[in-house]
Length: 527
Image (tube, rainbow, N blue to C red):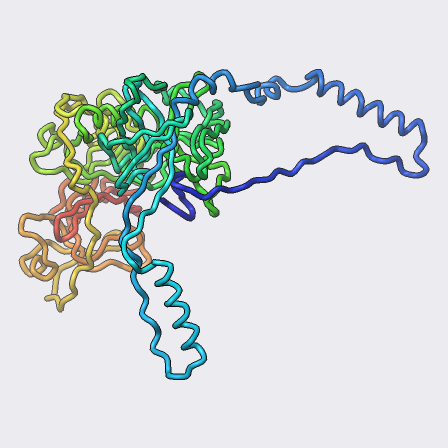
């Protein structure tokens, strides 16, 4: 369970209470000396305003629109039985014994500690493994017995049970799980072959901020609880995984709600409640749900294969910052900047290159860096797709065949290491952009441990307090390109900077490599 600022809206077995404050309006008591005429006039005005409020007269058109649904009882009655409580149990190792402190004989604390540790042993805290249980939520998506919940609800569980609204309890088996989107698919066998009540998924892309939604789940072990709210925001990234794309809602979500459904007003599942922001662990009106359009392809793969089979093209990408957008003449920041391309990967075979900005993939707009991995992951493996890139200021269309992501591999870049310092021979260097630059020589290659296959201009030193230093360029790095033009000597860089100045550019896009060959792009101001 994620605690503190981001908390999983998940497993709980602790009930809680709540209270409400009620405010009553009172008419002001007349002050001494106030004339009857003035008081009558005051009451008359108040009466006219009250009549206007009650009749809806004189109110802007949007005021009536802010009123919530009169009731959701009819819809709730149709879907409540499809929502289940998920209970799990697991065996945990015995807690580690704490040795009794070594106290001097006759110490006033000696008797206290002996009594404390004796009491712990009597309570069985150190006498072997113990069973722990937890609670969450889920919902039936197929009357034959398929149930969806969050992976963190059933993680590490030895036994999983689904508890239904009619009081029945069925043991569940795990069909498959996806840790990256936090989804698990379970299967139960209905008693006497009786079909279960199931719900269907809706289209989360059709939701707008302000649309009404219902959350149903098992908060704090209080099963069958319904809350109502609105969609507060879309496409939220809470840094919980590589495919964050959450719906945000103010419908009350608490511990134990994890894995439960978020419904639209038609009773279709448009999200899976997963996490909350809360300093205390209780709802403060900021909850997050995995959108149905993200969950459905994952669930289909878990059902068919027992695992996910995500698309992969073999690139490392960067965010397009305003400085990079200006240096590439993109106008506003958009798309995903390719930092490097894996050898023999789908992107390399399709002709993509480092420095390309992907703006469209398989007909879908790539709004920013975060969008591309989500689109690629949802693309079927072995599908041929069209990719639109901006290359050297011009739009190009390429085709590639999507590969399959190996889930055991990580796509994270290794942190840049500081290059070792050594006594350098006298070099002919140039100072540009706060960098001391030199041609790549065998001595510099040895000094900075630069791989043999790498080429470019060596960064010998970086001036403190410059944009180059702030953006992480370090000694031993190589400047490989300037605005997508190769650079072999400092003179090449100087010539390219002069041309950019002449064109009125305010920044230059550098392709920078560390000594191990990890490439990234950064934009530096020319002046």
